Length: 138
Ligand SMILES: [Zn+2]
Ligand SMILES: [Zn+2]
Ligand SMILES: [Zn+2]
Image 1 (cartoon, rainbow, N blue to C red):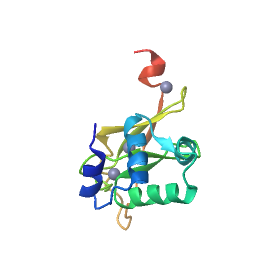
Image 2 (image 1 turned 90 degrees about the vertical axis):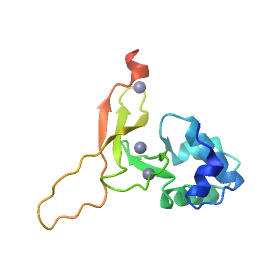
Image 3 (image 1 turned 90 degrees about the horizontal axis):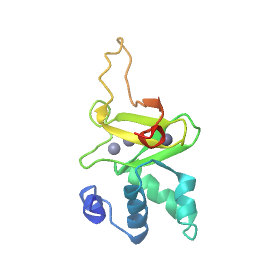
């Protein structure tokens, strides 16, 4: 289990109570979470604060966004040492068609693509779809 306060301090983010709660919530879950998952979990918290917490986490490479094609942006914790940089940190994601959960495949980085002249890649989003280990029963 990642040490939340240490992880945040390394990224230059002050570990406030709210930040620690959101961080732990994401750390405890294998699957990526939507903003509404987070809002529902912390129903008593101010929505703006929650949104800002996620925004700060994103800016500081504590979480990354995943667009898995469901129309809902999901968030997952970054690995230690992640800078969310293309060709270094960005990895594949897996979306289960059955349980609709999306997980990070951090050991599978997005491969370098040699683009035609004049093209500059700024972001990449690669999602495999299928049946996860829980749903396939293996
Ligand atoms: Zn990252
Ligand atoms: Zn599944
Ligand atoms: Zn991920």
